Image (cartoon, rainbow, N blue to C red; front, side, top):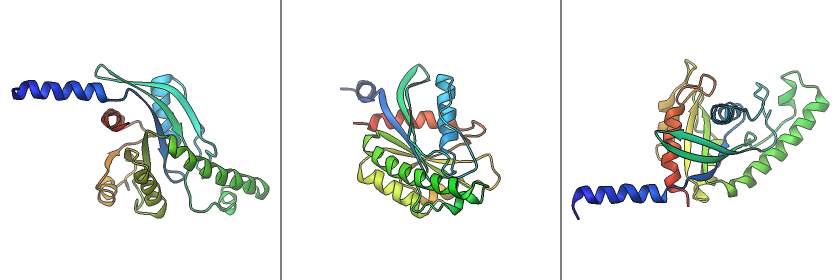
Length: 212
């Protein structure tokens, strides 16, 4: 078999083995832009947003699912079930909400809901085919929550793409994210401005080859 025929065979095998439909989970700490990211993807391909964006932490307190989101690029299609999850945190303190003007009673309720949402999000990990681990590129990415999320994904052998969000801000440092987690594919983007999504979609098509 010549080199040209061999390369053609490899190309056809890649097309055959690439899974065309999978569940994509969006994970990360609170306020890194997970719902903004989910909203952008969902709005672009379905015309509908998935959730409410707020400066108040833990605004998303339940797992949200958008089924049959079909991404098209260069004649290829990829169908995903998009899952937006509550922000993962090691501790939820009701006083965190009162700083944003939430009354004490409501703050305690939010804290309980947020804690429940975190537990739910972790349980959903077992159903994920690919995960976007979203990080705030303006902050030090090497923290306990990010390390815990990536460790859980690695233990489950789930393909992961690290998303360095908020590249529209001057303090954004994508290189810092890449240096912290060199073993992962890192895509920089701005969910707020809609920048960098073509690279994210390319990464998703690549990741689909790893889905079992």
